[in-house]
Length: 297
Image (tube, rainbow, N blue to C red; front, top):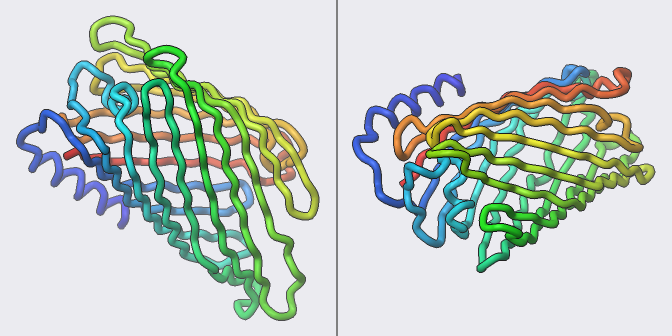
């Protein structure tokens, strides 16, 4: 039903988009995502997002459509609301509603970004006994600070911290709180090839530390390449490799995607990914699909 709703919205936007604005300050998005892991955990996510740009972005048909805010160094504020349905072999179907807000800012050759997201205490009931549950609340913060080493290459230091607090029901054993801290470097480069043909390359290196019953550290490398044969559509592929102490995260992730600007103001993006865990006994292998519709005005 949710996917059918998105298709209806997409059709209406295409029909009513009679002309294109020369510039835009607002971008609204609707996103549907689902994921499934080897241990039969599933998540279905519906999100609504809005971004307000502090300066107008020229709707330049010669620039790759998903890179305009970066190329024009447009500072922004953003807000995201999600409805997530979670279910596993252990826990019954549960709905959580995270809210995220933040901003990205540019000043000459520098950039800075920050965001925070959270969801309040939610009870995850056991399938084996619905009177037993574990209450979970979660918060996450992200920071990045970057410098343009060339006019179209940004190198950034990134930091994120995610915490989960657990409150088991009476009769259940206590569960230690979980904290995951990530520090890393990333780069984003957009290169014009010829005419409206271009390529965008992302590189990432992250050190990840998980602390719960013990402290475990992992290292992750990532590469994503987005190729624009023309400015209004792209194809992309990505690869990540994770190694270290936490076995459930060790492995390789492959991703493929595509995006198209159907009208000057409206675009669609689709990404699918597959995580193959190194140790199959962890049952943490995962497949994910994300469909995003965005409109600018």
